[in-house]
Length: 485
Image 1 (cartoon, rainbow, N blue to C red):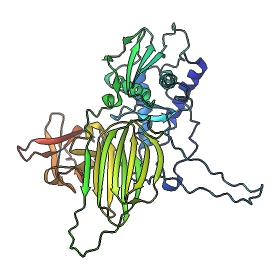
Image 2: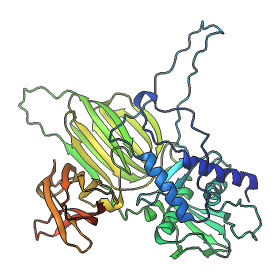
Image 3: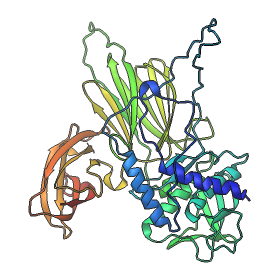
Image 4: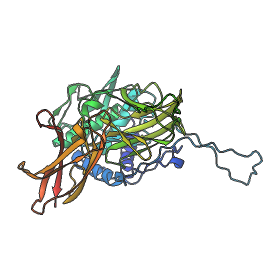
């Protein structure tokens, strides 16, 4: 059983960590800071009901993570500082700081109730214990204490008691037993119980080698969170909200007709950058830019990863292989959900980028010109993404009479249609646009300006889709709830 003082400190620290999370992107020349922020501000997550606490965390996360739509560069290892041998004792010379080469597993996952998977926050003291069982216990108790306000070693007579009483690991599955008061979990409502389940699964499986969590309570009984009966081990993919996904391979080659005497294309010089939550909420964007020369081909593929294989691996990996040479190859630890790390390696005239991700979530590949850029977008709102249509703007719940519909699509003849319907299903506005690309493995971009009629107000639903060439049926339908006012 954990130390009472340690549990109390962890619970308070979690509240402070969530309060002051920094969501700034990583500029190229200032990336890979060696010292992580240990101090956090004052706590706010000290409430008895989880629904209210999660909603508050969500409001804070939404405010802090909203950033202008820019793509920040990926930081790479800076050149080492050379310290002169004749430096006098009175001259202060900055020391060379080692750059992180491992993912930060001192993390817990917090849900925002926005329809996105939970995001990880660093918390000093959790996940640093000697055994995997104790590391999992420390992460979960930090969440529990933030909710109940009671440390794990107080008497069971305390009605607010919630703590991990045992942790058992079998293969890649961990079973966590909770001690709960007679009233059970202080969770009410569908959104809150799903959010709490997501937090538990993501936080427990942050431990390398653990992919599934089963929660029992008070002597081995499968736990019930409000109306949610938990009777089997669940992975991150089971609770992420995206549903079952298939691994896909996207390949593109540039066909250059050429006579026997024409010159060979010059090798491509590449640079890469990334952003998280900047271009679109919930989207991690990775960009490979062709700075000079010509890219001949690229391949993007995803796979389940072994997060015990290397210190920078996570649960899932995306691999982008481009014919060309990256300007600054190496390893970048990102640790911003869902993007944990980026590794780039040059071999045989090609650069392979591997993105370590929190989980398997939908990803899309697009091409942008002037300069040529290979875009890989990961995630987004589950309700705003289908197999052929992704809506980045507006976001679910946005309000306004005038808005821009934008995103990616891969539709028949590049035609992307839209309409707005009222609560009764009546169409109040509609139109279509032509995306930059049609039916292919590579997605095209689209953007539409919408002005709602003066007669329309209140709750409406934006629908984006394309018509099947076979029977005209709506295909790839995405529905985004909005408010017109």
